[in-house]
Image 1 (spheres, rainbow, N blue to C red):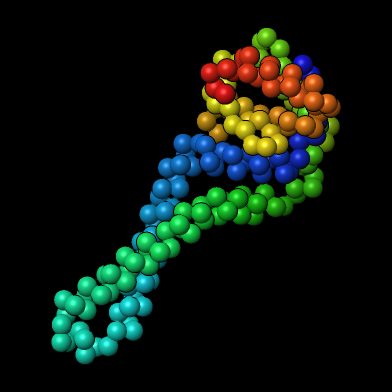
Image 2: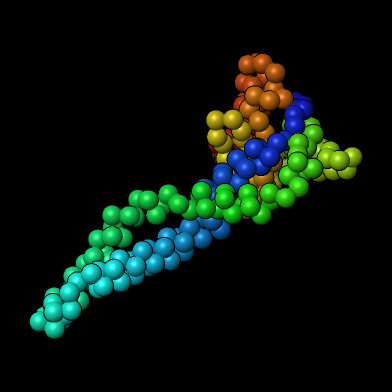
Amino acid sequence: MIIHFQLTYEDHLALQRNAIKNVKYHRKREKQFLLILTVIVGSIAMYFASVTLTTSLYYESPALYNSVVVIAGVLSVLILLPIIKKLYIPMMIWQYKSMTKRNTEKKWPINMMLTLNEKGVEVNSERNQVKGSFLIDWEAIQKVGEDENRFYLYFEDNDAVVIPKKRGVSNQEDQDALQKTLKYYLNELF
């Protein structure tokens, strides 16, 4: 099966989103991000609680004062935790976009031709008259990611080949054939 398409910047960003959700590095980094952000939020809440409470309460009952400050910090973290958890992916995409913002119009789109056969996935690309080609054996593919528009074949922890589900595959028969081919060779990963 041969698939011709143009890999766009949007495809590349979709790959980054998928990698952020599925790659070990990002799962570990997300936990660190969550921990740091919860400590910051809790500290700010405790600071504001200590500033807004009257000093007379501190002198009358230091234990009550400290308890109220700590409870304010813990409650603010618990209340904001669902929001904090959702911040990692948008922050990473924003960071990636800001790093790659320069010269995106010169790099995209990339003309791609993928050949899926019994050996693996042969990837041929051409950008600005520079051609590249490599073969990924089926056994080298470690993980398969998917969203509504693309498949992601990870052959290393942070490297993948993007296969659009509809672009490059002209009709429903070809889309079904693509799905069957991937399931045949990568059954245990689907």
